Amino acid sequence: MAMAMAMASSLFVFTYLLCFVPLGTEAGGSITSLVSKELFNAIFLHKDDNACPAKDFYTYDSFIRAARRFPRFGSTGCLTTQKREIAAFLAQISHETTGGWATAPDGPYAWGLCFKEEVSPQSDYCDSTNKEWPCYPGKSYKGRGPIQLSWNYNYGPAGKALGFDGLRNPEVVANNSLIAFNTALWFWMTEQKPKPSCHSVMVGKYVPTKADLAANRTAGFGLVTNIINGGLECGIPSDGRVNDRIGYFQRYAKLFNVDTGPNLDCQNQKSF
Ligand SMILES: *[C@@H]1O[C@H](CO)[C@@H](O)[C@H](O)[C@H]1NC(C)=O
Ligand SMILES: *[C@@H]1O[C@H](CO)[C@@H](O)[C@H](O)[C@H]1NC(C)=O
Image 1 (tube, rainbow, N blue to C red):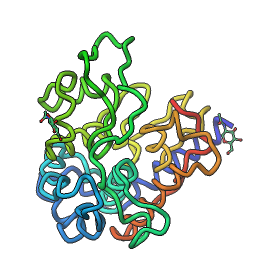
Image 2 (cartoon, rainbow, N blue to C red):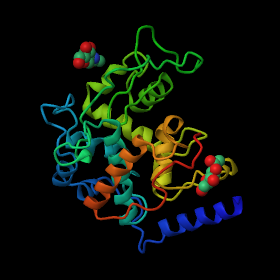
Image 3 (tube, rainbow, N blue to C red):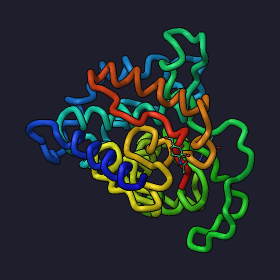
Image 4 (cartoon, rainbow, N blue to C red):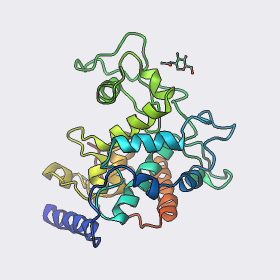
């Protein structure tokens, strides 16, 4: 069983890397050729509608500036891999901020980046057992920005890496569009053990541990969903939230003219 999984997963890594002439990591600049302003606007058809609380917040320029801060994003592996990674990132942030519904204009997957902060948080997302990143009194670490950064143990290290005080000033993630995109890309690019980074999964660099193999955590878009919110969404047959993420990814992969790759869902995966 574990053997078969290992073989399936190295086959997957192999097919991911098998894309002719790898372009390697390129200097900043190519992100604008992979994601033109026109493509960005075609992806996020309704983000600046009056109906969206994030109207005019998530700008193309902020996305590009944030992407340039993380030069390996969208520049690793061959062109197909680069585009697939970007499509997967944009799909995940779209689900996190979606304003779509089943019969929405242009369909449910044309409404990414509609929200900048969680509307009815269940709590302040303070893990008081975490001593490294202690909560500041009265602050809420609810979901904010494209990836809906949550919890003190994410706000703290994100702020440290990006140059803002995530524990004392978490609100800035919903007030500053560049910082907002920076937090989403920081989360995407940063390994937080025992989880791999979303980036490593989408570019074929993820190497599963024995525990990963036993938990069916095979590379693909479904594993990225597991990294982002697996505790609530994975290991459940046909979860609506997982399917919404997939729906966005399928639409965006088409717009980027790439296939989605295998293992789109995480219904047979255990969470981390
Ligand atoms: C962010 O904006 C809200 C209002 O939308 C405001 O109450 C808050 O003080 C702002 N925080 C920062 C850090 O700018
Ligand atoms: C792994 O997936 C198979 C189906 O492909 C399932 O039967 C099994 O229960 C899964 N294992 C775990 C740990 O979820």
